Image 1: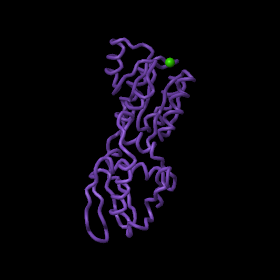
Image 2 (image 1 turned 180 degrees about the vertical axis):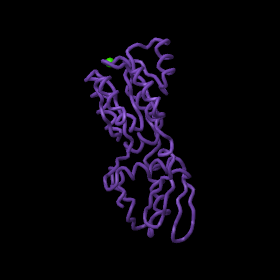
Image 3 (image 1 turned 45 degrees about the horizontal axis):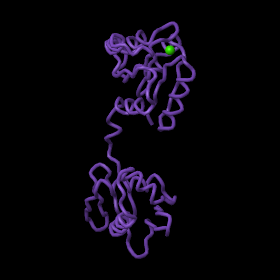
Length: 226
Ligand code: CA
């Protein structure tokens, strides 16, 4: 799990960041004072990313940024009420990797955070095994360990499998699937989803007529049971 340090003296903004980053699955620690953050430099740089406000009591975000850069290359996303170009350049010169003026859009902030995080963990091999078949989410290959056969999956098939993985044991409605895989503009028929499930059964089930993993719940949707 990625750890994010939030250096922000405005309580409401710190709380908003903390809440939303934790909802995204990050661990957070808030430093609500520039001086305190400077005195806890060791703990601050022991993070995967730092969100750093510029206007802080005692030690400014710019000074903190320079101090951090003296000892660490941890990614820094700088925040400031001042969106002026000159300040942005000063921030980047001080060693920040990215800069976001306040008020910021939360979704944009989360995307920038994702972009700044070390790539290694995002690129690691992600696999999932259903019965005797192993799925590689990076290469879109399903490999049957017993028969030694490979099946090439489409992007939508992989996305649907990821959705089932997230919702193990829970009924996933047709609407949820349509929303997630096709968005609001396209309207595939229910039969389209049925065809995905049929093809999953052929790949993953020992007996496609008596499925153990991919169940249809009539009139509602589907459930994946591990
Ligand atoms: Ca501030």
